[in-house]
Image (cartoon, rainbow, N blue to C red; front, side, top):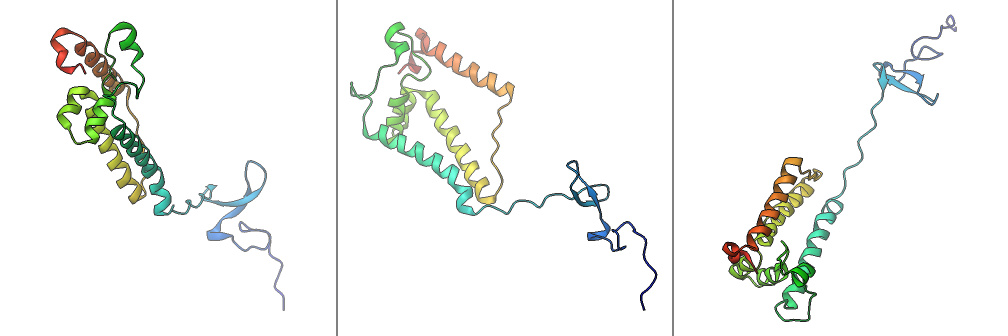
Length: 180
């Protein structure tokens, strides 16, 4: 025998509660959806990316740098005619912070660290920083943690100051050891 009719309750017109007691309420667009404790149901997290997909960006960046070093290691910048001359050096006689960078990369690719430092010490420091950042990026990619590289304003100004100081000193007589 059927029981008395039920009045609409918090769970819907038939008195049956929704998932975990959630009532159906319209969202901002007027579409009803489940609501828990007064707020919308959180979206499910995206499925984890595969190891190959996580490693693709750092491995591609590393492959590009390795290819560039392989090219510079093969085509000697000490022989004239292979690479263009620095326009700042050509027209003003002033060494820019990058002057000697190709010779430094060539020496570094051949394992001659002393010659690489003599050609452009700042570039060699950059190679080391790049190696550390790549190692961190690869480890984070394996662990599934996104890589976020944010340089604060303080560090940006500090890096700029080091580059300007390096350029200034290498163009003065007492800093001739830093000139390529």
